[in-house]
View 1 (tube, helix red, strand yellow):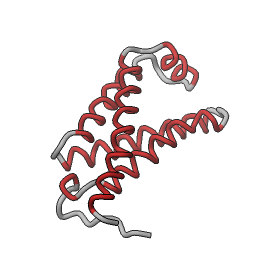
View 2 (cartoon, rainbow, N blue to C red):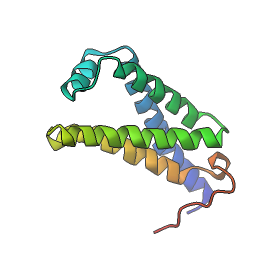
View 3 (cartoon, helix red, strand yellow):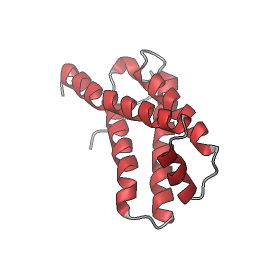
View 4 (cartoon, rainbow, N blue to C red):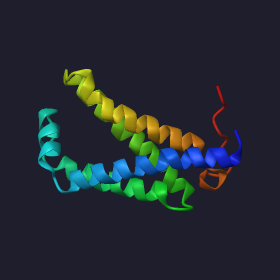
Length: 132
């Protein structure tokens, strides 16, 4: 895949991922009623949305910003853990599979962006994953 195509695909995945993270983070930070209700239904405390919202907004900013490759790695990892935790929470709570669709989609888009990121957004000295 050419560098130009890879960069275009990177931004096609990364821009929506950052927008989703920022929007979701804003909903968490403002304690939108649907967020509070959803987390309460899963048994989480009322203060959790503020923590999650803060990290989502910071992750979106870190992923979108130029440079900062180590911070980006942490942001990608944090999003993966948060979204996979959301999937696990819904599954373990006995929710219907449709409740886990949004976090699965977000983690898939974020992972695609991570894999497609340009060389200048990667941590130097770390080998890239082998293509399947």
